[in-house]
Length: 112
View 1 (cartoon, rainbow, N blue to C red):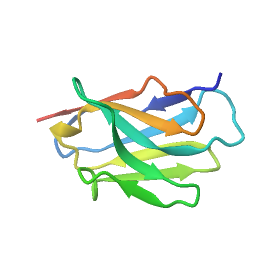
View 2 (view 1 turned 180 degrees about the vertical axis):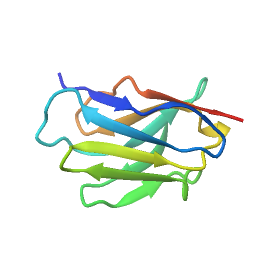
View 3 (view 1 turned 90 degrees about the horizontal axis):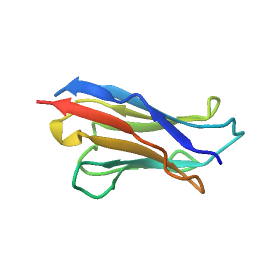
């Protein structure tokens, strides 16, 4: 079964940047990515950013102006560029795609 594989997380200081990537575990001609979510310890998974098939984007208020979601159709890869990171951005980040189960996520830790 196809799975989503997230990468690019890590430990960064406040104000730093990271770029997350998401790809399918198997070669897929086209899967429909829908967005990024995150889950902090003790909290529910929450929406970070959405993207439609025509490139329309939408962001959670907490990340507007700092995060950018994008798709490289040639590479069939979803990205999340995260700038000016804050400690409250610390969470496991998951990408989502239609009819594809959640992946393992990638840990983002922002130190103060």
